Amino acid sequence: MNLTKSICTLLFCSIFSIVGLQNSNAQLDPNTRDILLLTKWFEGEFDNDSQLWFEGRMKVEDVHERVHAIHARIDAPKIGKHVFYVEEYTGGDTTNITRQRIVSFKSNAPAEEIEMELYFIKDAKKYQGAYKKPEIFKDFPQDKLFGLDGCNVFFKKVGEQYEGSMKDKACVFGENDLKRYSVHNMTISQNQYWRVDQTYLVKDDSFYKGHPNDIPHKMRRADMYSCDVNFYIKSYAEPDEGDVAIKGLKIHDQGGFAWVTYPKDNKKYGFQLRDKEYPFYATGSDFFMMRFIEERKTRSNILVTAEPDAKKLSFNSGWVSCFCQKIEE
Image (cartoon, rainbow, N blue to C red; front, side, top):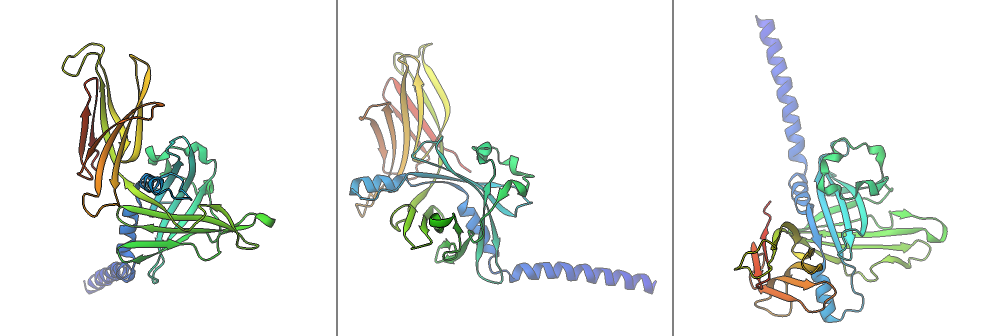
């Protein structure tokens, strides 16, 4: 009896010690909360349409390229615990995909630092649009990925945001006179994603590629809306069997566009949403707009509300109407 009791006591103590050690290790990691918050803010879609809109009005010399970034969280335990598929397109053209990556965040405890491991995808074109079906990465083998030494990004919390960068001149690639290093600085907050992405030649530190100054691409979080469009043969008040209804168009609020063709005249019409921060006035500086435009025309109809982040927006011009509602998480 005493022997059985001793064995049970020893077993209980051992289990308790293991659990206690695990909890202790978690409590000793200074990045436990920050890695959850950083990856929460990193997830989503981002666009710098507002930046270009502002630069155009200020007649800025070095206008930034339009970038739309999609960060989709994926379940890929073979790669890590906090893993994302990253896909970007430029110029507002969803088919002009310029970046595909897998990134994984990990704590570098005991240092107060979070490391973003960056991977390139072999045969990346096969995975374009994979953010729509992230389950394909469930058992994604690591031999389909490759990285570059020194090219990871290291984050620290600064105030209410996270600032990350590569180690100085550590991410080196290319050969001979085109051997170059990358400067990749990132700032992530709850609704903003800013990035400086440049390369310089190793031989003389001269600028090689990227935006020519240190002003970052200032991307804002893009929220998605579901929009219903109706074209009327007579008017919205006089239903006709020739009326056309298009349901469930997905448009994001950072300059997102959706184009539809009206069968009656075979013309294309675009619908755009813009949630703006207007910097020129101290009050009344934010607004939300819906734009309706015919393809290859310069004039457009615009509906504006002074309520930023509006959850619903609609217009009706008699022969066409559009109603958009924010898609809540």
